[in-house]
Image (cartoon, rainbow, N blue to C red; front, side, top):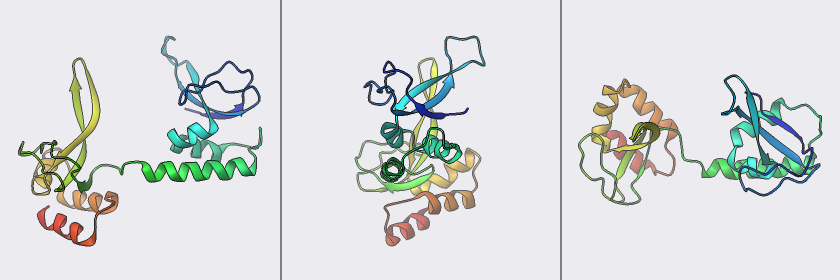
Length: 185
C-alpha cells in the first residue's frame, strides 16, 4: 500500500496515534489501509501527526520519506527531528523473534515442558498463534533454552536456524549469558 505525506487540507482530521486534531496546513502522514466499509479493493487513510508517526509507525514513515518527492517539502529541521524520534522508537522496539532474554517475572510457562520459567532465568521468546475465542492473534511464547531446539524443530526450524536467529536478534545479554544460552540450546 502507498502511504503518503501531505499538508492537511482542513483541520478536521484527527491523529490516530494521539487523537488530537491535525491543524490545516501541517504536514501529516497518511497510512493507507483497506476500507472496512467498502466491498473490497478500496482504500482509505489513517492520518497521523509527523512526530506521532515517527514514534509509532517508524518503518512505514521511514520508507515513505525515502520514496517521498519534494512536494510538499519537508523542512530540514523537521527531518532531523523525525530521524531522532524514529531512532529513539527503534531502540525501544522489542527485537524480532526468536530472541533470548531474561525473564522479568516468574509468571511465564515454558511451551515445551509446561514448567514455570523462574524470574531472571534465560528464556527463548518466539512468535506463536494465540486463540482468543473465535479469532487467532500473534503473541510471544517462551521456552527454556534446553526445550527450545526440540520445540522449534517440531515447528519447522532447524537447530542452525535457531542459533543463527538467536545470535542475530538477541540484545541485552552479556557474553557469559550468551555462552550459557548456546550451551543449553
